[in-house]
Image 1: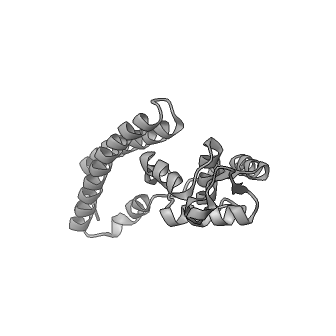
Image 2 (image 1 turned 90 degrees about the vertical axis):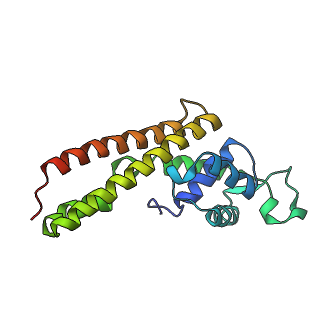
Image 3 (image 1 turned 30 degrees about the vertical axis):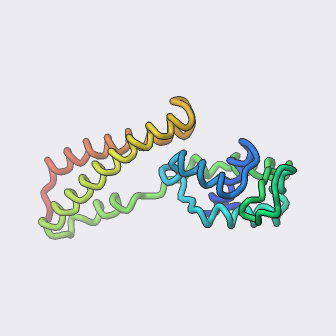
Length: 184
């Protein structure tokens, strides 16, 4: 997911993590897993390694002096260059971070649902409720894990806390929808 520049979301996450301290790919991935990356960014393990290679080739990261290149590229310790820190700061200053609102597929379905069969509407609402309840339980556990890894006031904890509140709000909204819904 590019943000208008040549850096992807994965590139920005990797640069940000390296700005915290030099690391190799496995270390980066381990920290991202502990910080519940799937809750706040769609970044996979292969993307971390691809981003390291891409950022190295672009001169935005470099092998840190403590890296042992004999252990292979996956164990090479990287740190951001000055250009890498500037690129990260420039990308984070873009206005589109705060001004986009991609619609969740369920909201699109809701707008079209007046044409669905009544039984299908009830089934989809039940599926959504079950999905949200499962996500809420998972995200509450993720919040505890993020707080243990960072702090109760960390940005990562705040993002997961927002996700929990959004899920709670949507569950309450589903109660209203189901109470008023008259399909057809």
